[in-house]
Amino acid sequence: MTWYARHIIAENNPRVLAALREDRRLEGHVYVVDSLSSFERSEREPYAIVIGDPPETLHREVVHRPAFPEAGLIFVREVVEADGHAEEWFGPDALAAKLDAELALALEPESPEDFELETETETEIGGVLRYCKALAQRSQSTVCFFSVDFWGGDCEDARGYVFTPNEEIHYLRRDDTMVSARSSHTPKRERRVFAGDALTLCLLHFDVLLPSGHFVPHRRSFPWAQFRDA
Image 1 (cartoon, helix red, strand yellow):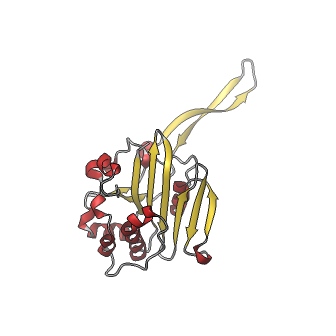
Image 2 (cartoon, one colour):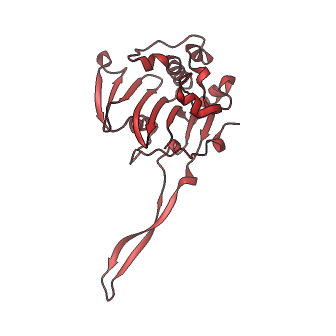
Image 3 (cartoon, one colour):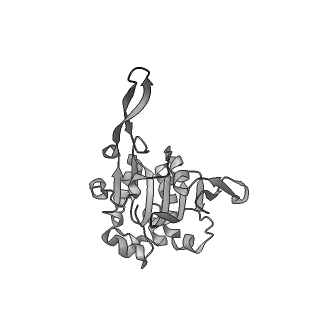
């Protein structure tokens, strides 16, 4: 797996893509992943035994497809914290210079209504979150900012911020099996706890169910270059 992922994830539709293309500061950082078909694999699996002398094992060809929306997803990457190790690690893929409140103004003449930022980390990425909220409202689409850190294959920190035209939900990792979430649609933005992981809960908003929590675009070897928007 990658050491870090700092992705704006959005529905793959013309409204989102047009809005992102308008902002020249994002040039080279927008990726349209319309399919993960190249990651499909097939294998022969036993499914029955015919009683006889000798018995015969019957096999069938099974195709394993990565969980992904039929229309694909759009990614903006890597939206990292300025002057941190992630910026150094990603090199030219890093989008650290865009981590500021002015980023939101690329899509709207006025920044959207603010929301609560409870932690120091959230305050540092406030400009990115406002950008995602503006993009969701303008494109009438679902947009997410997802951040995760891995170390030795284990997840150390994961948080996701999902924005729809009318709602926002923040998912924060509590431990390996539980996620704390708060929604703008609950009274006083009350916090709830869900079983699962932050990425799986975020991707459910894009009609994607990760059966194992493994997300192909988070592989360190994922070929991002072939999906870069021209």
